Image 1 (tube, each protein chain N blue to C red):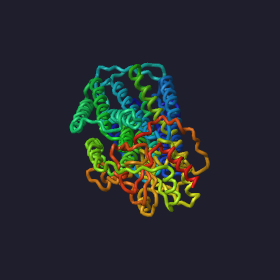
Image 2: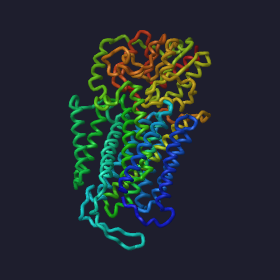
Image 3: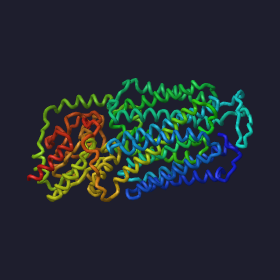
Image 4: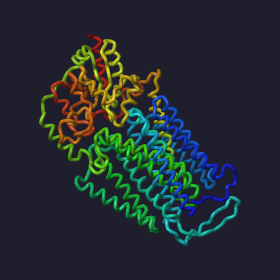
Length: 115
Length: 500
């Protein structure tokens, strides 16, 4: 029954977190939806913790270690990239002067057609 | 999981660690609250990042932690990939980047579930033949068998859920990335009417494997089979979806990854994972719904349907009706029209962003304002490729906030607008969404530019837009087309304005 109580505690946390998510995020204005998506995206990089926890328990199973290192790489990309990219986006909403550099002008590597 | 009953120092005291996790997820919530306003958003994001650092540090202090070399390797590699990617990505490519970052998150989830499954001896059930050697910190080795019940059923269920959803999210996100990056054609690719059957079969196979595993099947092959079926399902879900629906799909997959992270958290009994994952699951669901509403698409029909599969053909055949009534104009004529207008509404779209024309547009705006022309920007909720995407791009070009008008305001304004200047926007201006019930975008809220006195459309060519649908706007009598690269065309108009 200790397990059961762990489960119910965790389920309670799960449900409450869901409600908090709804409440907090319903208030975000449309204009910030892209940064929001990117920001929440960074937060689910928390799966990194799973990789960190499990790799410590994986004994001498080499294959598990390989996939866990990959998982850690993925999780780190998710976190680091996610927060940085969100920060870059949000910096642009800041009111003032920062002259936007024309760095991207010209050699756009994307195909412009069709849109 | 094994909770070592031998926490030695205060730092490794489980209650202390739990406090750190609680601080971490409080910071996530506080950070997301900050994201609700443009002035607090930067700080909000950084608060969430601090929360993440605390959560990672707390994990490092877990008594079971080890393999520091491999952890350092993984984090170093991830940083080496993630930092430059985030620094260098163009603002226009943001949706792809989010898809990619989301994908790796999903990838991490299913890999972790897989490793967990192997750690339990390739089954969730009890099995007596495994003898575990467990090294205690004091140097002695204890042995015990794992015969006492394997893992609780609920752990198995959540692990299997995480594996399936993580795999779907990983593959789906990668396909979405490929489509937005135009590595894979943006148009729907599907098995036609058999698509839903294929999806259903894959879903059933995936679930069957999952149920079998939860019931205690002892087979790593079955687990891999389940991952493969889920991977195929991820592909089968996203391939048939047209480019126009892609933001909705990415948002949905973002929510999926969040939920799978929360499931991993329950399986590993880690509160930070549960809370953070679930918040993302909730927010992603809301965002998905908002986007779908903005596009007048129902989420089930996006998932089941393959937008544009049949629709694009209908749209294409419908296009034949208006052949040949397109009028084109020159930059000089456009400049004259704009200069003598009282009110100009600029309708920016993804094409403007791709051409990096936002700065040129800003110059044009200034020039017009100098002449006393009132200029506004009409922003469709899904202009660009994600909600709010266009606002980011215009903010980058220093366009003042108060000039941006959301769809409902803008639609009231078009009636008193002399010239609407459509720059690289297409589907969001298509009157077919209002007038043509057979059109696949029928019912989608649009910017009603055709209500303004005249319309100038800057566009590269007559190619249909991202949704693959012909735009009726171009054939209307008040519309004139200015063909060319958005940036070049806008600069030209600005130059011509100086001559007037």
